[in-house]
Image (tube, rainbow, N blue to C red):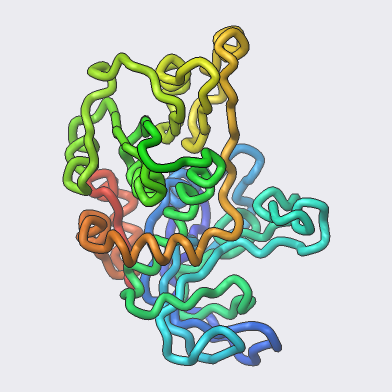
Amino acid sequence: MKSVVLESAGNVKIEDMEEPGDIPEGYVKIRVQSVGICGSDVHYYLHGKIGDFVLRKPMILGHETGGIAKSGGASIKKGSVVAVEPGIPCGKCIYCRTGRYNLCPDMRFFATPPVDGSMVEHIVHPEGFVYSADGLTPDEASLAEPLSVGVYAARMAHLGPDSGVLINGSGPVGILTAFAAESYGANVTVVDINPERIEYAGECGFSSCINNKISRQFDSVFECSGYGHEYSIHRTARGGDLFLIGIGEEDGINPLMASIGGINIHGIFRYANTYPEAIRIIKRYRNRLAPFLRKHIDADELPGYLADGEYEKYLKTIVRI
């Protein structure tokens, strides 16, 4: 079966490997059809590492996964469209036992070295982390993964009707976080420094503008750019909440300003128990999510696509496996 393998930084190959055979009890076999390209895939391609996660041997890319169940289970019907949660926690540590399994130190997460990802024709995955997405296409189902980051953050913000929210960064995760916040009734404003990104946010139905046009403060600010910490903390009201979602610079937070302003700073790392809600949000906003689904490539095209930097031209690229 076909697989997309990152051999080393800057070196992606299409390889053939053996299809999974026996399916262990409690697992589901999935025919992968759609995998979104994430910023982490690009980062591993360009640099071979993210922080302490270093590519030391070839690794299959991809973790934003939609497909078709080739076997059934207690909650999954054979032949149904499914969304695959890419992280498998240990289930035993204090974080897993208290429902915060995204913090599990022994998490095995797709396409995070040394764990293989999902850009391969078939995978076998624990049924507890496979979710029925009937009514959606596999392309749409693949959005459940990046949207889950926004769902997790919006839950932590305890948003309600008429909550004022600022999203700094109108890339894929920023706009999907905006959808999550709006689903809770919040009034959402999206800002960025890139006019093209701002256009995407507007096309998805959000109030959007260049960030220097916003001077007021918000009770909840979601920093999704990875590079706008100083801007975001200045836009957070006294006693408000700043959620750090984008991964970029290692500094930029002014601790004195946070302390004097009584600003609560929250680190957002992945997500937990979010997929059913993410799938409901996709169904609710599927027409407005159209800009995420415009660009598709075949897996065979991916090596050249990454080498040419074509992914930078689109809000999201979905790889057809």
